[in-house]
Amino acid sequence: MVNLSVNLSGIEMANPIIPASGTFGFGYEFAELYDINCLGTFSFKGTTLNPRFGNPTPRIAECEGGMLNAVGLQNPGVDKVISEELPKLAKVFHKPVMANVSGFSLEEYVETVRKLDGEKQIGWFEVNISCPNVHGGGMSFGTSAASAAQVTEAVRKVTSKPLYIKLSPNVTDITEIARACEASGADGVSLINTLMGMRIDLKKKKPVLANVTGGFSGPAIMPVALRMVYQVYKAVNIPIIGMGGISTAEDVIEMMLAGATAVQVGAANLINPYASRDIIDALPAAMEKYGIRSLSEIIGAAHA
Amino acid sequence: MKQAIYEITRNQKIADHVYEMVLRGDTSAITAPGQFINIQLAGKYLRRPISICDWSDTDITIIYKVVGGGTEQMSEMHPGETLDVLVGLGNGYNTKKSGDAPVLLGGGVGVPPMYGLCKALRAEGKAVKVILGFNTASEVFYENEFRALGAEVTVTTVDGSYGMKGFVTDALKTMEYSYFFTCGPMPMFRAIESVAVTSGQYSFEERMGCGFGACMGCTCKTKYGNKRICKDGPVLEREEIVW
Image (cartoon, rainbow over all chains, first blue to last red; front, side, top):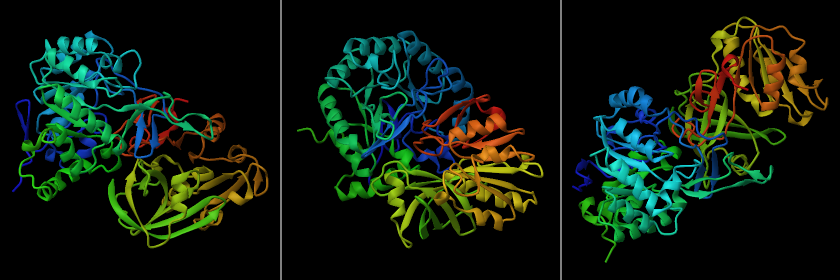
């Protein structure tokens, strides 16, 4: 028997698989298809203080080995998340959930986390300082060590739950940002958010996305994500949630060898709605194939 | 919604750039005309959403136009090959509001979902008028299939090379009807909106990520709040649409 369980900042998870924020809504579209309690947990749709419509359409474009999205943090706002989404979620998911939070100012991050902090089902916070699709916020906090530290420090004061900061790959040195988060009280970091990209429609000779640029995700970005997780693992002593193009059980093992304690599955959920469950089902055989008895023993094992 | 593997039993050209494909497999997830399926293609990351033209207990018929690499790939597939498909997506048309004499307006590759809808309305005993709009004679398809359902069919072509010269709205203006249903390009929708005299339902198209409501890639604003074209649509009622 192989052991899939991992411990993420004091919370035991049956397996390290976490559907990534923005690809799993608040869970119930997927709960219609399979029992989502098989998941380690999932990171719910990025929540902001106020309701957001997001960007105009088209918001989606295809690329070789992946896709671009420029949804722009569409969500009902934190009050409705608490009054409507979480009660609905509680009926179909009975494990601690990861609360993904975004903001456009320090005050907004703080206020959103403060409001969510009393919700019993929330196990971890994942604070997104790396959304590439919103202007005047989001990623701008994640592109300098100083502002990443500011957000971390401010949010840290209003929650004692495990606090993960979600990092942008669209920076010169991601390890510097990760270190700043660690020094400011983060319990962990999750990486990578999408890579900023674009496509141009040849017939119209104009950008495909109404937002012009979007976030690139899918299998094509996996080597980039893996490299960054590997580098950050060397740089910090806090756990890492690794993500970026994960589509198979083998990808999960690779990401954990690079240093991830848990792994998020993003775009794959959109292509195959059963992807996260299928990856969990495939893990035992993949572990046996590579002589792995316990997943928690291989975290960072690729490092000398 | 169900995900399954379907066998292609037919894939043939029926008009310029337009193909009819029949897929054999589980159709139990289809609940209404106007729903769509989402097809995975080798080498393409995103699935291709295509409206359902007709279905039985064992078969799904789709009609698609070759507009890019994905649909071109589909056009080159042969009977016996299989496809991974998500079936039964979207809300579909609500036939309960049709009244006794609805009119159906299909433009180009907006025609296919009108067929399943026409079949459903005929089964309910409604007197159905159908207006099929194309650019030119070589693009016309399914005229006889609609007639075989007992519908009163008018074909319009923009260049006048077949049927009535003009747009579907030129035919619509001459008719009496209790309700309308439509699928087609946005300029056609705007024209219908300006001349239609009853309530109706429009089926919208948008670039989609997942097709089942998870990614928020295809959201639009309506008078009753945000709706996902893939899950809360693609069919919206005239009264809720923000133009």
